[in-house]
Image (cartoon, rainbow, N blue to C red; front, side):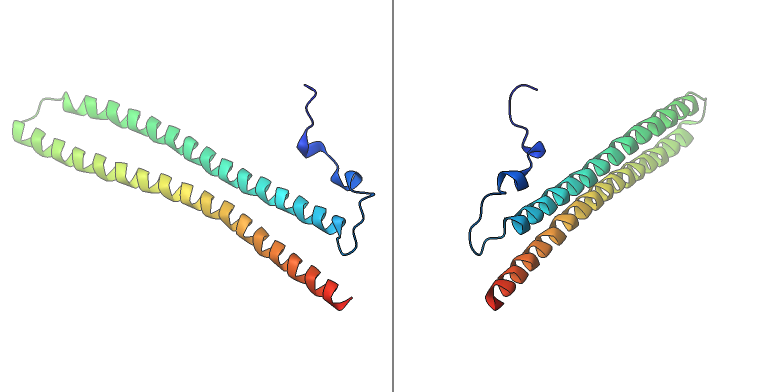
Length: 143
């Protein structure tokens, strides 16, 4: 290592082992913080998986687009009447536009789902943390 203290490798239970303040439960605090870090790790993992899914889908869309463009080039080089060509091109433009919108919607929904899942993990942990504080306060009040 480069001599710096790695925060995640520090065992805070040992660091606070001799630390004793009446009414302060260092073990509970450290357990709560450990849960917070786990929740953040899970939320980051969900966000990363969502980004990976979007990137993978973008590659698939690009591949499909290249294949469709190849087919389109082959089709437009075929001799046809001008009216037929204009109608065909208008239909192809419409289909391309609709497909582009569908792809954009799909990617946006995938990202939104990943963000929602990550946010739900954090929201759940915040609610649990507040319950822990409430329960600790109640137990201290009854003592």
